[in-house]
Image 1 (cartoon, rainbow, N blue to C red):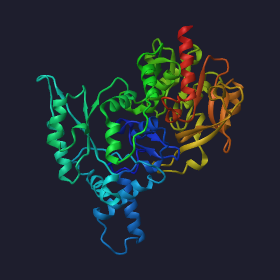
Image 2: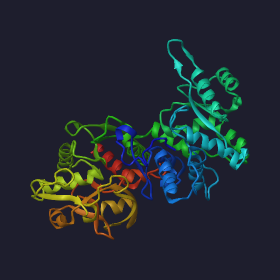
Image 3: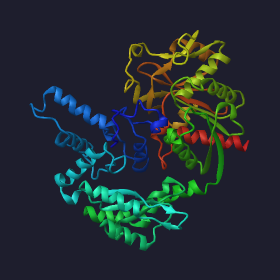
Image 4: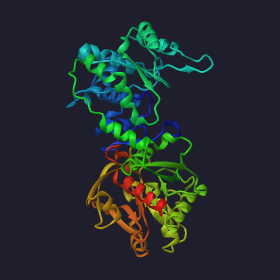
Length: 484
């Protein structure tokens, strides 16, 4: 639950909000949902991201429709009821719903959400809800001690609005000693066993191991009245070992638009880590502008919008193509690869995307006819899961090991089918299509060590124990390039 007034994250700059995570059903959501998918293997939907804008929009539509029968529409109960309804909507058919409320306790915009979950405990029974509060316990270097005042104050604010936390996750850079835990438990009125160290770790996949060591799983089961089960964390331990002590290493250049804020590419960086796990290798990322590629084993051009830096990306693609460097293009990366190939191999000078140059002589990337009259920006792109038919014997089909795949999309411009004949005649292989509309989904170069680009975002479906096939194949190609 995000307290901002945007309906969703789709129109927000990555510099403002980080990556926009896309769900199977085309929801443009907060990047934290990507973490939840990677950690739980659950498939979330657009309903799993609730914003203030979405809540108020729904209530106002109901008011205009006459659903409230002349009553005065107010924050309590109408807004809070809408928030509770959103929680119940995703609760069907599951045992436990994890509800995260973003922002800081005391923020004006988050108060309706906190009030809603306060009421929820009464609605569904006190034994069926627990409150877990994430708080900060900083280590003050000058005094060489941990300070609990921030936690005490935060809990005081939370209790003032009627919520008594059951568990405290204390974010800190070291394990909390028993004396500090005892002090926090006393002043915050929680059980000492419920004061959990949320310690900084080298890799995010260590977090479950730290929480288990702190007894978080046990206290949650106890508070919810659930029976204990046998515990097997070997899968997490294996992942952490492969991330922290891999057998090999490779270096990938990422030529992106938003490299100043790494959260802009959170799913991408995690998918590259997963690709490393699949090959027992550490993937070192070099976030670069196109002119600063240097010595790397592979080149990745990720998604993005707008014309800033496009020519640099096109130059980088050309360099990778001409020097046999493993190349992976994602969304915008595919479009740059097609533009570069059209210009420098197929003899189409000035080839470009209609997004970057509306008067280009060869618009090899263009809007579909049904998109040209669309002016609204929110939720109007090709979003969500689409089927892709793969060409037999292609690099893509060998990586996936199957002929039809499903991938998540988030884009507005497509490869212009008017130029397919010229591109294929020049040697570019169209190895994946959306059959229903005969749109290009994957291109590759048969005479290159590894050159694959997709119009979709494979990073959204990668998992640590189930690395995405294209990321695993790309990292493998980069390792082979390094060895050669």
